[in-house]
Image (cartoon, rainbow, N blue to C red; front, side):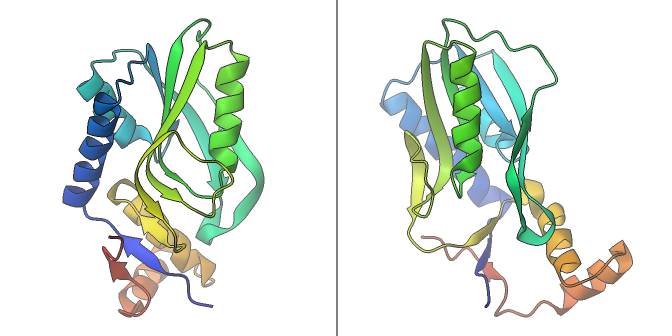
Length: 189
């Protein structure tokens, strides 16, 4: 079975980040703290924090997808800093809600730290997700693997490894062989 893959170039990705920030401004989201779900949510969270003038930007490192799109049993979530969210209004930002497992776990963690309000925002919300974010730029009814520019090399290398490639040199050769039917540029609209 072929998986639809979509590469979003930097220009489009930055546009999506600013659209997300504008949506949040328009509805009056005014958090005390923004939690970036790393790694994918780092760029959107940084842009949102800048536009909303929120200095308190913290990072939770999460990983749910393994090599080549293989799911882990449960999302791994950790922080390299002590999070003080008690009594704060918190906005959790990620690039996509795919299965919903990561966002659900992050929201549970943030709520468990006694935040007074937790809202969520993503660029893409896949309708297959068990978690519905509070704010998003686009809802995707068709499942597609999205290549964001900040994870382009990581994603392509993962796809090459899925084909049994173990070295970077061999991965580059496999990536050169990817044909147009396997990689779509911007089909999301």
